[in-house]
Length: 495
Image 1: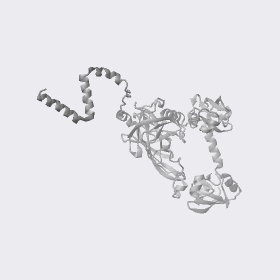
Image 2 (image 1 turned 180 degrees about the horizontal axis):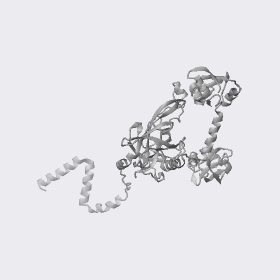
Image 3 (image 1 turned 135 degrees about the vertical axis):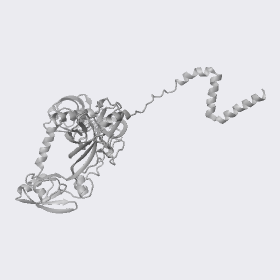
């Protein structure tokens, strides 16, 4: 071997030493390919044992959707009046603030006051145009108590809007502005959605118009404590002011109306809920056609089936809606349903959680005949029921409340018992909250939010007691009122 050959070999060894272990592997593999072709032939068999990676996922570009549909998303400003609560007047905050579920599900328009004495309010929300002649969808809570609604377009034009109708049960409202040839959004069927798909929200969080946020569908068919619709759950960032704004799929179609958030602070915490667009469309059509919305009712009170109940009733799984009470003479009663029955399906649609049943019934049509699969005494039975009209039940409840508005003509008060949490926070053990004061009581200075402690010196704890004292009184009564930290007597001349 010549001297130059030795130098070249030494240089190769030195380079290999500098590369290190990883480099050595690379070099050895390279040498193996050059010196041993048989190793290369065996490589495909070895590679076949390696797990095949999932197809790559390309993140969506929402810019086309925003450019095309953004102009049809509107900002909604509302002025009106609402009531402050008794504890807010007393500087003690909301009477339900300590309730652990108070902040669990919040509707997220810009904050407004709540409660007893009427005060002016201003709110903001979002909406979207669904017809070129100015029909707009938004949330019912956005326009609740509104005396004036203003719609602002992305081209900065502003219109006074008329509320064609709203449905608190589904939280859908329909507005109309006097305009033509407006941009509109395409509507999709939310049933086409799949969990994990990308979705996009456009709205006005905190008044920041046409803000775009994106995320994925986290779940479908969510039943919430205060909801009557099968919500779409997402992780799209939505905040106060996003209420009523559209939720788009990747095809640029509206699949839902953003309605609620999970929050302990009032801001976004990773969970948001949208009303499926097919539900909203059904409400819209009823409002435009008839000016009102009807929901069906079954006439039962239900509770969750936990594992303990499942074991007691010999159910294989803790699923269904356990009937705890049947309204006398209601649709369920006429169909033969009884307390203790567990409703497993409605028209073949499985009921997993007890909250599924009111959602299904509410979205049905009054007068519709449904088939219920019921677990009763260890076996399944099939019953047929004709659904009633929830508006009839609501009207009945209104009549009952009117009857309990003690001395409405003579005294002018609407009363209700103190809630337990109100008793704890106010330190008042008994009494009646004055929800509304009119006529003689209002003229005498009685205010909503006051607590009525006694009438003519007689302590009162029920509406019936007040009625009894007032009926026996002459021309006037003396009311002992708790207002904040003060107790005062107010004489009221009966009307």
